[in-house]
View 1: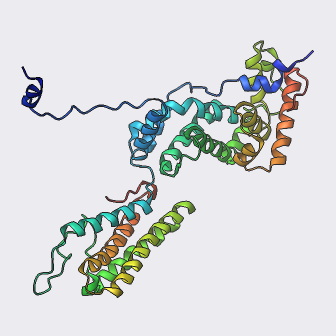
View 2: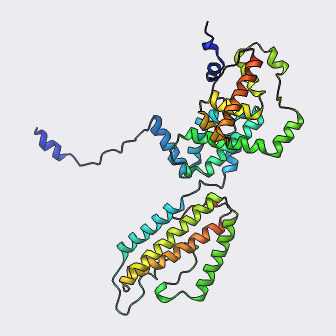
View 3: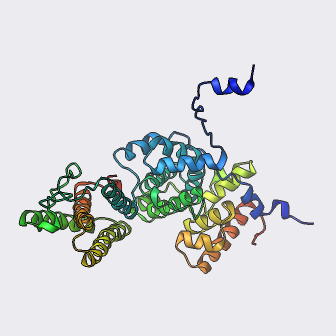
Length: 179
Length: 202
């Protein structure tokens, strides 16, 4: 005679997998979520940001006026972002000091984050550096291109905003790239 | 009246926008995407859909209602924080379960769990009077599972109730596959003894 229908594995498999909690747990969760947002994938954000900048330049760029006024200098930076000196005009001491300060703060914040988040942020920073490197290579072949000069300067802006975001956000998991 | 002329005379109007109502898995996908964009209402909906599964798992893994509630809350908070890391290689429920198992293990390895043990509110080896006296077989089984040692209970719950393979359970629990099998064998033997069944292995 077989006991298979009442065997322990069968009885275990029959137990319900879902058990509703006796009290609503959402209010406690919701209170802890306040002020946090899901972690944003910075690589995508930065890539998208660069693409939008490139696109906006292509759409709005005007031919250089006689006298050689700087092309992208008149465009306003993101609110709260540090001032950016254009690479073509040289990065002045103030700018470099600001960048160094932000970078130091970023490195310090980075050490306190989980390893996975650290890796992701470094990866995202690499995206900016890679973009800058590519643009520099293109500029070497075409040094007078105002578009490439503006794009190069924008990578500095992106990097500064990146540092500023990480350093000023209490919980890096809550950061979003400004789009 | 010329029908064609009548049609031409009608003012051209834009078609009314059609509301697309997503259902089933597509609706769930939409909710998930909304939550990933930071919509807490959407995340609350995901919570409502999955809380019974997560709580059930936590309750069976911990054997304690309060610990299960804490672990469930920790699971959803952690899920919210890393929601964008969910890549749909597994189902959302499976992803939540993975987080829940981690939360339970973290909690049980901590000081709080040790103190709770010292307080003696979790039976370990040996059925309680309530288990022996209870006449409902399903409840008997639930209580007998609660009384299992942690390692044996974890493997039994994941493999026996939630249907994970030995390898999956071993990975979730951070154990070697052999250790996982040994725990399961022990769990079934203890349960069999306590439930008055012959040892059942598969």
